[in-house]
Length: 130
Image 1 (tube, rainbow, N blue to C red):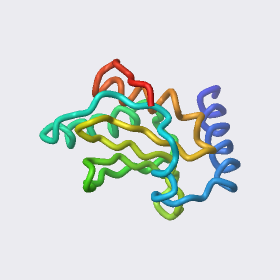
Image 2 (image 1 turned 90 degrees about the vertical axis):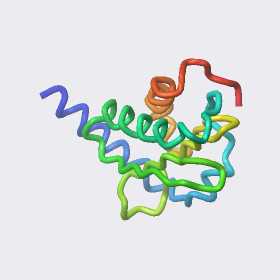
Image 3 (image 1 turned 30 degrees about the horizontal axis):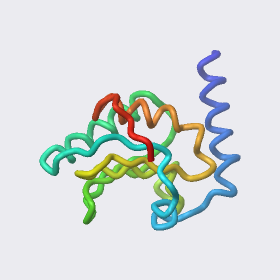
Image 4 (image 1 turned 135 degrees about the vertical axis):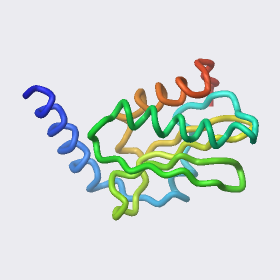
């Protein structure tokens, strides 16, 4: 029963914060990084992206964040959204050769530690200062 109440609270908190945080991916990528880790060689970027996606999903469980992996000019990206139908992204993790960089939409900083944990579990504990 306590778990159901916690999940309901998280979903309600997400819905409440979504009202004022609509942004697009381009806007999110102009934000300063929340944190960053050392880079990943091009050959390992897709594997790291899958790992980050899977670990994050395992930690947040039933919270309805949809994730996708995209390849871009600068490397792989793990992009999370509350729901596919919404335009605003929740987070963007760029997995590049020079750094793994995470950006969060302003209203989603409550996921900061969860995202940091997911990245650290997949690329190492050595966080760099942004």
